[in-house]
Image 1 (tube, rainbow, N blue to C red):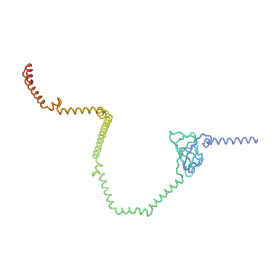
Image 2 (cartoon, rainbow, N blue to C red; image 1 turned 45 degrees about the horizontal axis):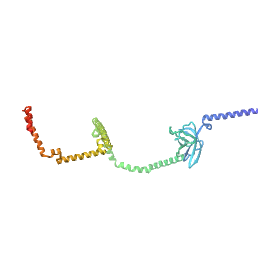
Image 3 (cartoon, rainbow, N blue to C red; image 1 turned 120 degrees about the vertical axis):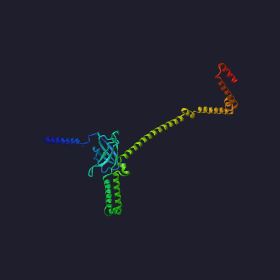
Image 4 (cartoon, helix red, strand yellow; image 1 turned 180 degrees about the horizontal axis):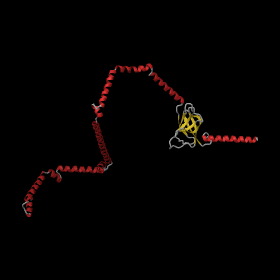
Length: 330
């Protein structure tokens, strides 16, 4: 009987333990039997972060903090992440707090899609945010500033600030009233289409003329742009021509770059200079033609005889014509 009771109790406790394990597994609280990846991050301060704190990716729990230790003046936080979580090597770890009374946790960013996934022991970049104390100190300083501004514009201080402005309005009230009246008259004239500004606002003809002027200006701008394109093309051609000449291409390029052609041109110019010198000195047939007056007179006389001979050809027969020409010339 006693053995049967102990057996029943043992089976009962075994079933309770099995049910607890199943519930923890279903709820996600049991992570000992799951595959996981351990990563690290180095922080300047962890703001009361404790082991067991959740690790979240975009607000979704993906792991837990397994350890917090100090190494080389940094706080190293070791995190245990589920193996099925897609965390990249360029993800950043940030310590955040879940409200005034909430527990701090580690928030992870997604990282780049092209970056590799984290492996065991990967160290992530860390970002330290101001803790609650620093935030409260800044809020206190801001509240003090607001209080100072309130004190500045309260009571006598506010009256001292508005006093000169009030005196100015009181002393210049007639002038301000006249200015406002003039502005009212001018605005009415503009609305009625009176005056230059009123016509510009109300006259459709002026509007049409202005649109036409703008259209003409646009056409001129298009023409100027076209001329600019032509000028750019001309400049490009000039640059190409200069480049060809510099490269020794074309006649001008060869004249500038080809030494043999340069020497031949120089020799030709020298020969031409010598020929012109001989002609000026009366040497050779061309020199005599240019400089010898006797030769010039002889040629002139011969031409005159030929002219006389041609005058007598009109009334002569073929034989007599030949005789006349021979007689005239000789």
